[in-house]
Length: 444
Figure (cartoon, rainbow, N blue to C red):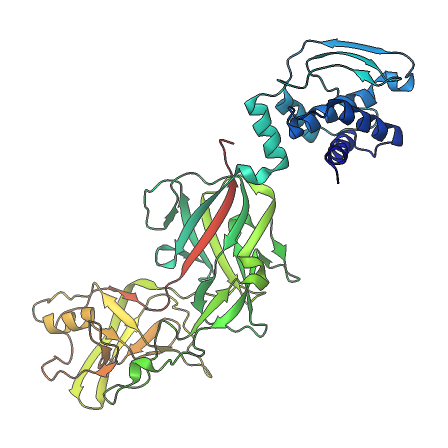
């Protein structure tokens, strides 16, 4: 397609859009005539298209089109506000009987019988108006990207652990449940939720859905009403890794898999799932929190906590004898959401305790140190809140990969003082979620 034909086509499309109706053959011929008259190497093509489209559109709405035998004399001195004019065109409905008058600085003598028209296209645009026009036709040039990391170790768990919430703060100031960015994210036009790893859950479809609750007004809606922004494939991290790596020793106790892989699904947002992207029909203007929920894909599933505070010991019994392990009965004092009922009784393969002491810290020093430093690798879920720990099935501090039976004949059997509350950390349950935001640059 020649340069002139491309210009005629571009002017015609723009003019037709302004008129809200197709052009007649006479109008198309008039546009072709104007392009031939004013297409010059020293005139920017985009400027030429814009100015010609505006001029011919106004000409098509003038009364002289009904009486072409009369020349038209127009003289206007008003300043030309292209940005305001285009905003009015976009925002205000236009009907056949309610055409927007387009005003611009020119002094024109036109005779449509002979196609005579003399005016200068140069100098009609300012830098600001050109940037505004550029933003209308290529809005992606006004977009910026920002990134947030959501860490379940500082999340607020809501509604039976089916929702994880973080406060959104646009400064680097931290709070106990915050996520931060260095500048304010607003007028969001697109999000991308990267692949994340969560505890396993039942899903015959082997699919998951993820929803950002604050943006639920613009989302997909499943037949049962579940809203979601992205769909992911359940990628089982146990396959094909050797999950018995931590028990590969004759001195090992029981079955202690690699907790970084065991009982985990990666919610895989690959190319088949639009790379985890969702585009909004209208920009999300502002938000002050981020709340995530995961579906199976139609029902929300509970996410296990990485950290539980205010746990207590109901009993402590350490037996320093071979094959007679004793038990520590721990109460989380809240639901831990680790399955325990038949046929899938829960097992815990990494449990670390911190902050434990008693009101007799000197007399109980040996047990206090043992409890606060060891990684307990054999725990059985008793009910929704309790976990029974086998205290001799441990992994000692350091880089060693094996779970061993640790026997200390000098260890006291139980405590002298009254135990305190403590914090439990479940290695492997921590979730890191990364979200990419595309938003409109406020300075564009």
